Length: 536
Image (tube, rainbow, N blue to C red):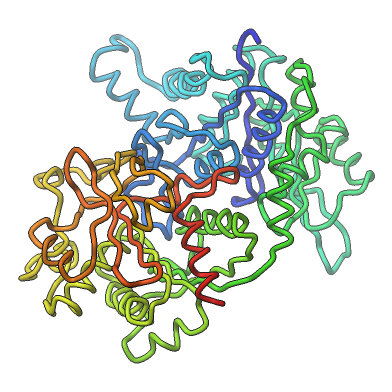
């Protein structure tokens, strides 16, 4: 195609308008037209990555195949595009400054005063170009986190201004996502927040080419004309983004609004063919017309913020569609579960998923939920800490080790059935040092996992420091909790399954990270199927 094209997505007025979904939807449409597209996220916070952030602060930490701890928007990119992202797809202010400071210490800028312009902005631009220069992609979409006008965002906006000058007007497009609120008392939509947001951009020297306007009410031609006039944007480039029941409708909505055609026109690219979206339409049809309905409980400790379990929630949607079933996914705070109320808390659920997490808070409630599922033969799925809790519960209530625990929760326990991995001992830094990224797993034939995957050699993504203590493996297996998946290199237990139970599977890895619209994860698909059968 020639040289690369760049699309920048910024946001204004308020956060959480859905820049990531708009970027992913545009990428999906361009990909469906035959273009090679990738998306990257630039986050203004100073952390090197979100790995050490509390999920309440930032939602889940998404892990890529190559072991990068990244923003949850990368999960949307992968789910929409059905391709893997990498370390290069997520950059933070912290990473930018760390690189520049390392360069300065090494002597790369000898004699120069290191400043935001040009040194910080040059490093931002270098990162923006990194994926484009790989020759793997025709179009690189860059989403800028935060909102225009934030102090933290200023260097990124300046870098966009410079990039447009560097690559030329025909090779870079700026999409600004903004809000047009509806005031019920006045009975009308208000464009002033959008005008102010665009003014912030203009003060930084950036004229948006396209405005995507989040709204609760349809934008009439009068509103579009007004926005076009006051924001210096062509009327066909004022795009309506009205609220929809599911994020998976957004690509079709953007197609209807011709967002992809406007972008291609501004980039001087041909429309190629009409986008191939049959698979997406089929998914949406099944999502909107389920044949059955079930309730599944997620037992976790960050339940007040569903974004903490974003990938699990989306994987459950994909699995529900695969089973032509609507999954009513309910979050239950594990801190509120006790031996006295566990039966009432889990009553009416066809399956229970015990979620990942860190630290001792809420652990006892997770153990009670797992015990209930084990004894009552309710389909159970444990992920990461959920698997470790399944082992602790089994050791306490089947093996009889009443003080069995993970040394993460109780360092002095006499029965550390979950212990710190050898590679994690003596580490000084906490950031980016866990067992991260894709690792192989060999599965035993005939197991639930093998039947789900349809093969015995798999690769899954990890994010943990603790593991099943090998000293207890034989005793655990003898009593009926079988290790059905292991890492072939280290022998690390990756999957455990309970004998004589319809579906009791727990995994050390994070299968939710690899579930996409077009490839729902097989373990989630089989879990939902087991829950369906249980409900009948």
